[in-house]
Length: 354
Image 1 (cartoon, rainbow, N blue to C red):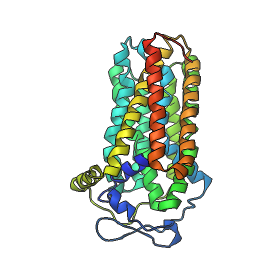
Image 2: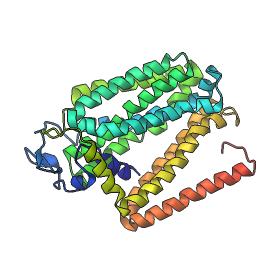
Image 3: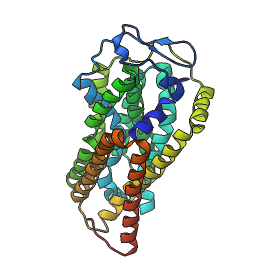
Image 4: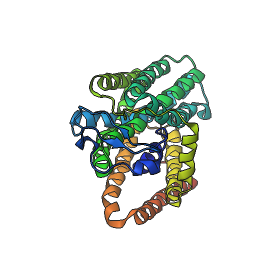
């Protein structure tokens, strides 16, 4: 699914469509002093970069940028019942704490690529991370649920710049296999966040209350902002392309016209709908209904994320042997089986955190 998201996000970078990105020169872009990027039009030179794309510091930084969305969602899940109780809200109203940030993810994704292509990766990352810190502080100080939801929406708009521009930076530095290798290393660095953040959130909620989770988020992203400001140079091509709505629409039209794109996209959409349906409801059921503490729920959710990451790891290894169509079929069958089993247990009245 990460590779599919990668293709989706590449279409936002100004006029460069997914088709144009596929025509980029092969091999690491750092191999030549002034490499080039193919776009709709002339070949644009890339900046001569003084950056070690194989350094552990860069890999860790890119992994943390990739994990902004997961960190924003997973760390707050153990706090959902406490937020609902704090504002005397209904379950449906409390779910907007998660719904608002998801809406921000969608909204921000439309703007991230074009803005970064016009103004550069580094300035937009610094602006987005700064906005995220401000939004997280606003969440921590929210006097009401509507204010909290508004701040979460802004937080989501800013958070999505991390994974979108992280992939843009990878494409600026490398192409094809080298890009996939750097993306894989960054994904491995990112994978620790979905496991640790629920545990940290559960511990903070139990000891300091739900507002402390947002102070954790603001502190984490502030450190990431400092790291980007000190260690990450501009990687975008030296030429700047103007913002073009028509170019974006052409990219959408091209992707929607590809059968090879529509089928896996629909599959990823259905899978994501199931995941987010579970995420938005799990804490509000497991803690007040099943009687788990925030810490116990965080441990349960972290174990689920371990399984999620293990599946991604196994799938990445098996895809070269089985091929994409067969691995997608088997993964879809396993996902559907799990969903049917969960629905059957719920209809049978079985209530257990196991």
